[in-house]
Image 1 (tube, rainbow, N blue to C red):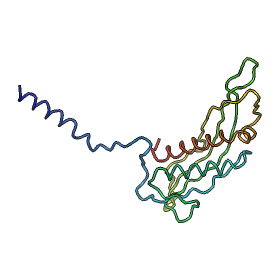
Image 2: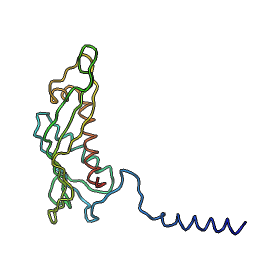
Image 3: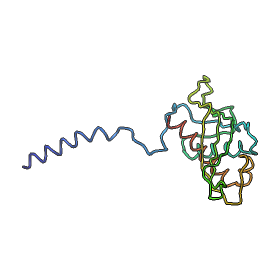
Image 4: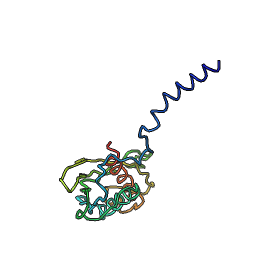
Length: 180
């Protein structure tokens, strides 16, 4: 009896021990970037939309998200860095998603599209890119609000703009660092 327990414990230990160093890490904290990348440049994104200061808000949120990951120094220029993250916001659209009994929109879907490229400067190698990265978010509106275009909607609802910029930045950084 004692020998079978010992044998059972030994088999379990033999099966579990190889898993101890298998490389698991907390979700959202991994990075598949080359070890040579220590400093990342994130210059101001280009804004090809009519939404005022969208590029500043998104760029600031991307920088903050990279800094929050704790592994990289983030600069505001593309000079003197190991890699650079370039972005152009190409479109922001808004579309009604749900309606009330009076056929008025009560929820909108706001969609941001951007061309994103992340590359090393030493050899100009593109590590990750997405020419049409898209992020959508739903927003509830009051019964008196109307939204004819995204610029008007975001100009009136700064919280929506902040949430959109924050979530889009998280999406970009996760895509780059976690190689999804």
